[in-house]
Image (cartoon, rainbow, N blue to C red; front, top):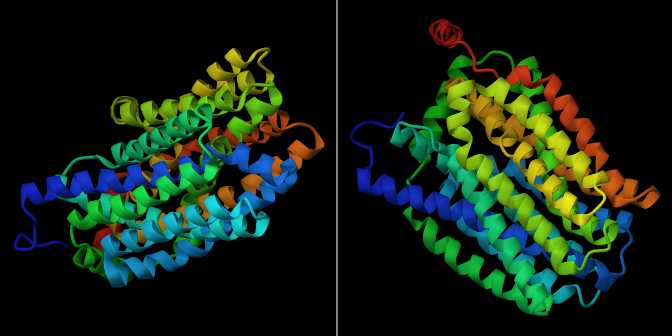
Length: 406
């Protein structure tokens, strides 16, 4: 672990905290900026729901490929260089979409694959830095970083809604976003703390403990299933809320994007106040209550008689989905000696939701409506409620005994 000699100063850690917030906010801002213009890109390319789902699959495919590679990249080059390179790659992907969607589907798929690859590796690296900063602070802050991501998505969605209302072309809007991300994020993450020593210590602990691989541990697999359900709920909201409001409620494009922004705002609020709720009531009761809230929100969103009711549903859906992913990551990392392998396994399972979500909702929307297709989210949230017990904290005595046995 990091020695006293290697420990950075309080001012250095404070700078790293702000840099980590910038990385999370920038990631959310980039993704939501693209997502806010999905309806316009869909219309320009004349895509059916199922075709749109397949196009969106390119993002998940890029992320799935990046996920197993990013761990090695971070180990060799550090989280700062990883975020820097991937921010530039993501910005380039957005620019390819901004220019290419006027030519056809192929450039959009290529750009979205680049966006997904950059986003996936960026996500791993910034969480590695977040965990390191958290250890140096000596208190929980990870969920606040995830709230920063949500804040970035809100900013991106609101900017998108404003751009639509002002009739700003997709190309101009996304080109500006690409420049901002490609310049601002690499400059901000220069304040990251070096994580080579911490990563080597975790790798040493993992080898020392040995034992059953994370992929074969029942608890880890259940946590993965739990996180998959919430990732599906979050990712589906990101991809389909604006389209569902526009098509299902005959709303203007700006209203659909505003519904997306409302959903993201609710998620941000849930993640910001979540630590206090978790500390007071515990993980399992909180996530089960939020699952129920999310289910109610989905039903209101799908079956609401007016778009106003759908907006209420989007708020409850966002609140209900807010803590599932961060809580699952925390549960996977309960035992520091096995945190790296378990978090990697859970994250890989969760990303399957982003891989399967877009085409599944698109297929269901093609055969009924996008609104009714969203009921698949409710089914997975119900499953998450059943396996929520898996995220209960590991007993301290058990962890201590495991360390002694090693």
